[in-house]
Image 1 (spheres, rainbow, N blue to C red):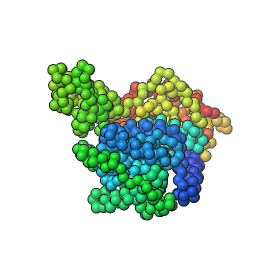
Image 2 (image 1 turned 60 degrees about the vertical axis):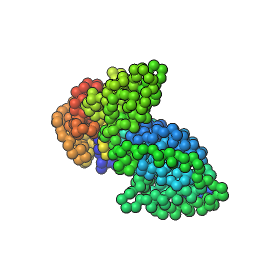
Image 3 (image 1 turned 90 degrees about the horizontal axis):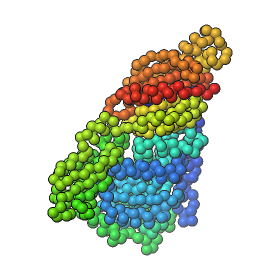
Image 4 (image 1 turned 135 degrees about the vertical axis):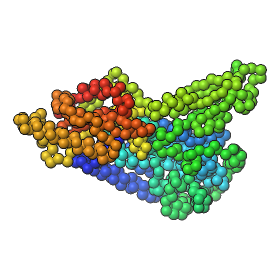
Length: 595
Ligand SMILES: [Zn+2]
């Protein structure tokens, strides 16, 4: 069930909340524009501040940490301590001058020849080796790193995610935006699909201009020639001609007059300080060292020239990551992790364990053992193999296991229940599931129950959605209230209410179907009792957001409320629905309507 489709577009209730939200977002955007307006500084520099954000800086750190783990599985990390030490030393000289919240910055090299770099919230900065190879001197490399550092300091990632969430998240979470301080925490819990993919939204041209300007200031403040920024941009702009597009510009789209704006900022700062640093021996050494390395293994992502993991990466082949690997005997083992990682092809590793294949004999006249720990499709496995054995990972068994699960494995509902309450109802739910939302709308889902639908939206594959829908029927509210709500107590009124409930339910289903083309009704309305009131039970079948072409079953419960049509949707993949049904029924029995 695609949560975004449950907002019931065009309905009065949603309209009001949507509108006030839009106003709030517009107001906040206006406020942030004021903050971003150039202000005078001692040396005439442009003063920049982070824009509107529904996350706290601490939450930047939390979601950034999770996203960095995902990113490091999905891109080809250099994992070279010499390169990473150099980048960190240089990066920390720069980040010491980054304004705002003091994030813990880390800088790592990516084994990708495309000229690019990216940053995740909380201070995770990734530099492609191609950027180091393309820079003429340390000031130019520092310029790219200062640019990325500025994206972190200005919190562009969670700012973009906040704005996107305001447009995409289920209504209840939007409602929470207006008041609660726990919204960021709720968003942070939405899972890896949210954290990585949503945080890798493209920056706006304004973001880019800000990162260029602040990056130039950071260069200046840390003693580098601030002209390095303009020089490097000019250099890669020249390379970005013809067929050889420079990846940096697709991920960091160029604002107008980019180079000129940077040059202007150097003037604002009072020009280049005398004695400012342009190059170092360390830079020349590292650049030579990287140039002498073998070409990175070719990968689909690199063919696209992007340092970013593919969007919706959950659907692609799971990454094989060698976590540890050692080869030897008795107390003498040598680390062969990098060696094995470099041999991974098409996310598989297949070889015979010999001294030659392990890069040497760590102990003569002893029978050697290879121990590997690796991560594949989000799980960790261990393998032990003896000399001359053949190793093939992931094993066929592991591959077919994952194939049947489609990579999604939500927490099985616990027998213990806890209670959820919002403005519509009270309901018990398994205590290992989580409830999101506030106001009218809520999602209750196991961890792993929310998946990326392939279009960058969070969709519910397992769990429950509660919301209210305003049907397009005149005087609907009065008709629906019927017997239980006062005025009429006669047969006609009750029948009128029943008809209105059916009509409203049909309208809601029609609305679902508008955005879920393959949805169909598999069991038509049946009257059931929920909290001593008549309600309708309808079963729907729909495409599951889980990849692999499977179907899901949606059990729709509709209840008349004075405010509109309250509905509850219990969702699970068709193949798993029966196993979840008793949990869903128990949840439905616990429902108490707010009166
Ligand atoms: Zn940028």
